[in-house]
Image (tube, rainbow over the protein chains, first blue to last red):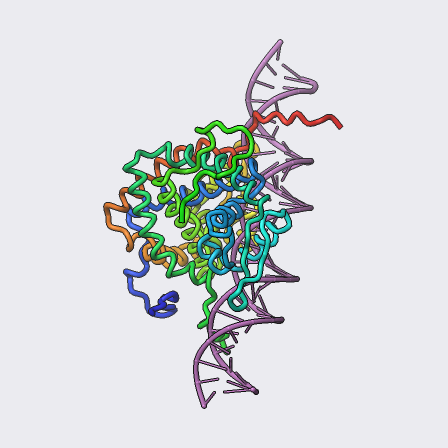
Length: 185
Length: 185
DNA sequence: GGGAATAAGTTGACGCTTCAACTTCTTATC
DNA sequence: GATAAGAAGTTGAAGCGTCAACTTATTCCC
């Protein structure tokens, strides 16, 4: 298991190659990608907030639950599927509980806690779904040809592989090896 | 395990076309795209925060300024280029000013305010760039083939068209036509 | 030329996410 | 079976973004 999360901190000698920015070609692709990953989440969030009174992350959490047997899932797994940290999820579940959309239940195994979608929550997410996905279609699927959708899925899938075992798992799962080697001076 | 795209109980009257969720094909593409637009910004932000002590948005703002003649740009334009709202930008510029990386200057035209990158800020962003883009390469460009990069750029560009004149411009530029027919109090 | 409407920025409050510290429970090891 | 290590969750504080309200400057327009 190679966790090269921390690249060589090279305070000293630098090889010219490592000081590069992006090539011309990369730069223009990067600008477009940056636009999408910045604007799309903002658009989704604000639309859902306006029309359904929930954040996109809350929606995603409830959708996942709604498709689960028993409409229930352990928090640690829910966090991974919803692409969020456990801490973030815990806060969100608390809010959803206050809305009466989700309920915490004790899992059987160990210290497990499950989140379970209530009927009220189920109604809510079923009502929000069509409204939200209409917007998703407008912003994404209506804009692209079927071939482009395929290409997008392919490219995203490849990116996600690296994202999942690199940085973001570091967020989802605590880096237990993180020695707090404070700089002793 | 069946995929219940359509809920079994449907509250209220339903017009079939409008209540659709996503098709099977769309759904799988959507999951991948969602992963990318969720994980990639998080990865970028946390890496830049750790290694350069700034957010990705701050970095983007300073990069834009560094490439501008006079290393200076009016806030309203800077907001658009950096994909952020004017309010967000104003807050960020204030923070950057406190770091001594940016300075506000009065523009010539109208009520214009310019942001100008200081020397210190220039040094900072020039130092951060290579570190950051090394990570970008690791997460994006090293993972994809040149063809995939091209496809990604193409698809992102098409998505951005819709994003820019749809929702997000509503964020960047206030909807002035929004008559706030406030209830007279 | 004097208001009204608009454009450009700023500000403060509120809500959400992150981070680090903490609690509990489970498992390994002797 | 006791103690240590790790896994799963929770919590509070701090920082950032959004939203609405506000301030100033500019333009329109009879």
